[in-house]
Image 1: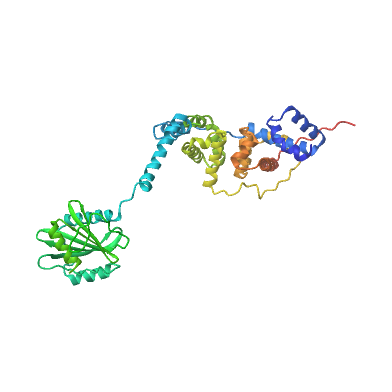
Image 2 (image 1 turned 120 degrees about the vertical axis):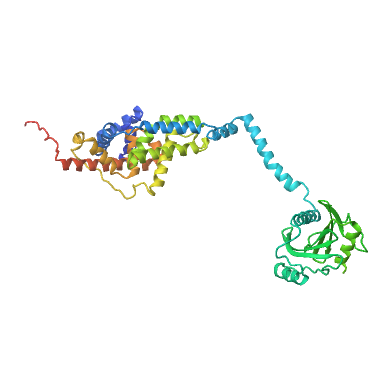
Length: 268
Length: 175
């Protein structure tokens, strides 16, 4: 045994953790190496001093009580949550049930997101403009600084919209223009005009809609035009495209009156 | 490992935890705070993180980690210490020193070496446990313990010298 090998075993010898054979081998080396013996003696003296003479700081009663209170508190429902999770994770039937619930919890939202057909953009935009129309009615008559003059409205649109609405109809004696304001439809900026015909409030929305395809069904034939017609929130909605722009009218008007409004806007 | 088993282990090892905390901390309030912080952290841990490990090692590892973090200790105090073993005939007189002298000798050691000595010589923990607690290899643990004892040895020799105690003259056989 070398001196380094002997030193490696000092700790175990000091704490009686050597096998008889190892102990015998180490003692053989110590009998032949006074330096290792001296080092071991010194370590033994210090170890014994610490073990028998140094201060030992037992936990004071107040700390013990405090820790016990903390442990009891942890054993309440909230404190035992990790334990419950541990049981759920390590008990086979509970693990199966937990896994099934987790899989369902993950799979259902994914199913709804990826597998369920996404709503048609036309249906979606009809829903959005109908909601905007409802909001408008709740706040009718409009107040504040929304301009009522076509020139003012056009200036406002120029300042706030990132496209030119290309609106030709700005009201007449029969169909009065009430207000105009910029809004958002399908997360994009849109121009909105409010018209009043009798007591009925109708709105026109115009926004960039090159990506919105007009469904082939539910087309209403109006003097050679065929806008898509839908009903949402008890209002009639007409949707059509002119170039890159999508146009929508939301109105409670009867079909003939709505046709008249459409023609005014579509073909002034 | 359940929360209940962990709580039981904390109660069993509370004295060892507090003893180490007291040897590390500056006063008894700081020691109690360190023990409480250790227990809280252990209870917050997911039981699996502690299962399969020696619980007392797990608890003491948490305590050492918290202490190092609070005191921003980056090293273990070993890198800049080189102690040569000194042969002396004064060790037989160490028993004449007071407990306060011995405690003072332990207090002047770097924290990691002090903690290692406390755990091995006072609590009787094996090298493997110390290595796990301090994150050392086994040879480094042996070096740390040897260095700590030599530093304490040197301190106690100096204390004996300052108190004027000298060993009794060796009896010689008559020719």
